[in-house]
Length: 243
Image (spheres, rainbow, N blue to C red):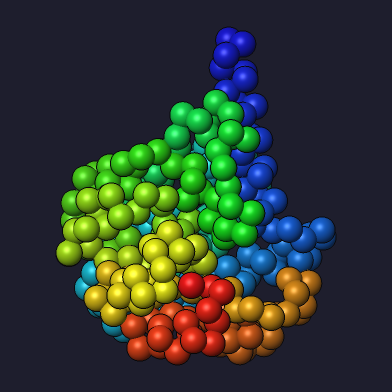
């Protein structure tokens, strides 16, 4: 019983860390805007996928803490906003295979502070998921041809079968693309079609406390960069620190 209590406490602590990293804003209004912006970003991504890869079977790779009871309300709210945005963006042109969650590492469960997290990473879960967890998702959902990840890419990406699988493609929200490699490797991943599209934070965007613009597209353009094979070279030149 004592071990179970400690485990629950650790999971809650990790969830709190993730929520803090995602919000980092002090007031409830700003947190609500962060949720709205997340939904907008994923709606734009969903629209693009519906136009570029209609008929794909998509698996949404989501935050493992989103399936655990007793988490902070924001954890569930972020997951719900993501699914709403994708569904409204792609409508019936993309088939949703499901929403699933990669397994966490034993270290993340036992002692999350022991897992090194780059201070500037946008995706802490890249370093908290178990080795082979993403391959396990691909085996569990063999009909999925598209992984839509709202938690970035996993560390050790190059060794994964799902990454090397030529029939499986990826679409990403706020990934740390440096996990792919250098700028040349990142560009190659987009140009080969391995990554269909990615949404990145735009450097110099307005603060989270800023009001959301009336037009969702204007809000998206002010806050995010939409990365595809068509513009990856230009974005690397203009925003080299992102790649």
